[in-house]
Image (cartoon, rainbow, N blue to C red):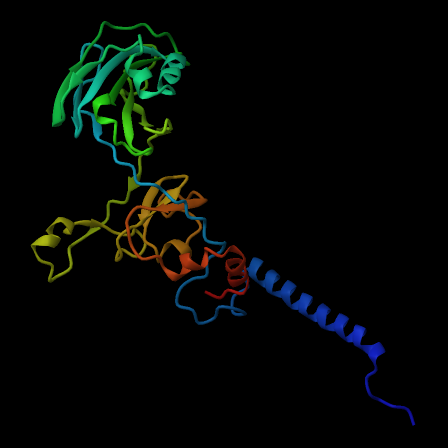
Length: 308
């Protein structure tokens, strides 16, 4: 009578069958996820599943800028007068460079602070710290030719006094550079600030980018005392309109989402551009979804099986 029990020779075949079943199950889950089949997984969840992995968070560094420079609103801008507002919390030097060649400007900016202050292209004037103060800059009309141009109409440089640089940290700002376009007959682009650069003590040169903040705001919570009065109108998330916005999206730079709504979207709700990354613009506790993202492998497995 033959034996019906398993032998050692049968074990490899069993392992192969188990491996094939596991591979088939994994492929089935991947296909269902990519085809967005509803009712197989995730049924009963109140919130929607993210279609893709949450975009990576960029770690930003806070930088203190002691200077401000802005053009006055509703004021005409021309060579006969550029009205601006300047403030500084430190002693500084300021200079206006009319018709600045692009190449010479960037060569100057990549130098050290003493080299910038000693540049033969700039005529600096010393100023003490002060609050917002109006200034008027003017020059003879320049003929810069048709675009593309090799010169900027006006560049304004605000640089720290070297007497106040002994205790600076490497990431402290030593100069603010503002490039201003002035409209003329050959270049009809609107007048205004077209770029601003930060020069840091460690030599890094960064271009300032504007954030577009959602205009939604909410009233302060009841029960707040006088200390909370400064937060009476706080910008809110444009999706839930309940939590304060805390995430700025890239590359569109729209600051319009809170920490809870970000994982639910793969496109900016304002401009519909794809979200490739983001960064935080306010201090708050990191939600669980962001803590999971610190472990890329685990995060991929969680996304694979729609488990959060």
